[in-house]
Image (cartoon, helix red, strand yellow):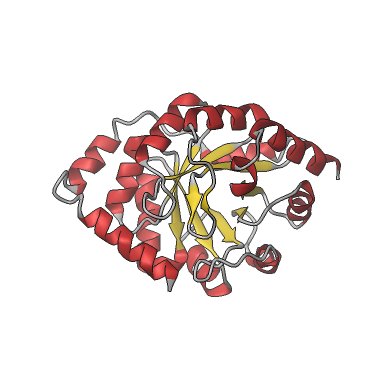
Length: 265
């Protein structure tokens, strides 16, 4: 399965960095990184406005679509997203399949005042501490690739250095694992990571299973203000939007249009 291929490639990539710095040193260094910005609080704050919280994604490519924006400058894109009204940003750092890099995250974090999510296939503590050193305010943890104990531990590790953990789920058992692990920020991915098909109904199926007090983010397949309005009305707190924005000739205008029309719907 394709997900297993990505995970194995990630494992080899991370193992190749073991000789550079021990995890204990990374943990100490992460404490010297710039103070993290409040990722969850920013999303929640957007709900008090007459709009919707959007996590706008900086994404060069995807396994299913290939290159989306080969000449992308993360600083320019980040600034356009901030001007357009994004509540937070997401940056792909996976290099082989998404052509991302830590540099993209570092440049993004330095260009704007928004909180930034490090989006990668995180398998252990090393990647969490590295993300903090790069300036991440939150990390993505994918329930499908982590055992329940690993998931709970990494949520705790992220919290120990002031980061939020967006725990991504796609089906009922993954959502149950996320909640049992103590997730306060749950992502419902409308994309099946095994075959990359997308179905927005995944969010509407799983949203009623999330208890009050947990912030919910819908991910993937969100292409219009009508989609945002439906998610808002279903009690979703935020949406992560990538391809629709990054492939737009004017991401700032596209984002403003989304937010304006979703608020008026």
